[in-house]
Amino acid sequence: MQEQFLADKAFEPFLAKLIAAGPVVGPVGKRSQFVFAPLRSPAEARLDYDVTILPPKKLFFPPAQDLVRFDGDKVEGCIEPVAMVVFGVHPYDVKALDMTDLLFKERNEDRNYLAHREAATLVAMTPQKASSRAFWGSIGTGVEPKGHDALLTKVPGGWIYEARTPKGTALLKHGDFASATKEQSSAARKAGLDAGRKCSANLKHPAAAVAHRMKTVFKDEKLWNGLAEDCFSCGSCNTVCPTCYCFDVQDRWNLDQKSGTRTRYWDACLAEDFSKVTLGANASENFRETKGERFRHRFMRKASYLNEKLGGPACVGCGRCSAACTADIADPVRVIDTIMGRPS
Ligand code: SF4
Ligand code: SF4
Image (cartoon, rainbow, N blue to C red; front, side, top):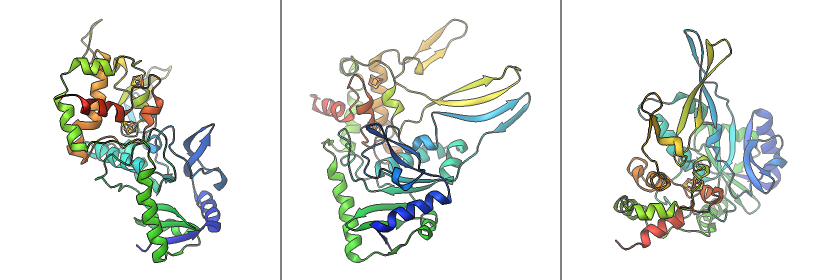
């Protein structure tokens, strides 16, 4: 579809109409950081954000999500999607959602996730800033984001809006758009290309070479124990990651002891109990008992195991894990550089 131009002065009225038409979630300031939250007015939107604390994944796969309610023999699903516009999502987070879409669609479809995802209209936005830990300009460069309904890009004097789906086109009625000129469209393309250069951190090695090297160091216990030496097993690196999707399922029983809710909670493979399984009364086995084994598992998942299925690494370079790690050992750029720099 022909790209549309929205002048700066028409932007606020556009966002105000979107907000009036239904729930719009977008980036807002939270102390010195940013979060995705419902927008109450256009003035709240911080489209100059660098990264949000949690990725937009939390809107479709929240930290705690009810799956079913039960009452005796009666069981009912809890799939209650909310039609909302998610506004201002950076392309690395769109790529992460693409991965989650694929993983939640394979084999048995996860309707609790997919129903929320399908009900949303995703308006992506070319980043104006990058966080100091981000390296999205240099990872998965061959993988294009595809799960968004429209892409917004700031250009001199206004914004370029590129609708990619009927849902993206449907939002045009809320704004005073005009067809973009050739100059405006090429300014948007240039802004898109320049965005990748905003990251100060960069991966130097191609994904295929990293994936191969990871396999060759799998058994190097000294390496993994060294990398994980200061790890607290807190799981923060998992919790903030847009591509982590593991969860734990728990039943919560009401006082009547016959009704309750089955709920899933985010889980973290770096946490000590993640891989603990029962062996019956008072016995258990933890098949990733050491910090090194758990740290290795996370990096093998991000840089090697899923590459074939996803067409690239299962990391989009947002830098959230690196910023969230108290011990400052989770930065994928540093870990991969260390591994790639070791003699074979
Ligand atoms: S591994 Fe770290 S940098 Fe990569 S997507 Fe997850 S949080 Fe972002
Ligand atoms: S955030 Fe850091 S300390 Fe916490 S589990 Fe991850 S690597 Fe370990």
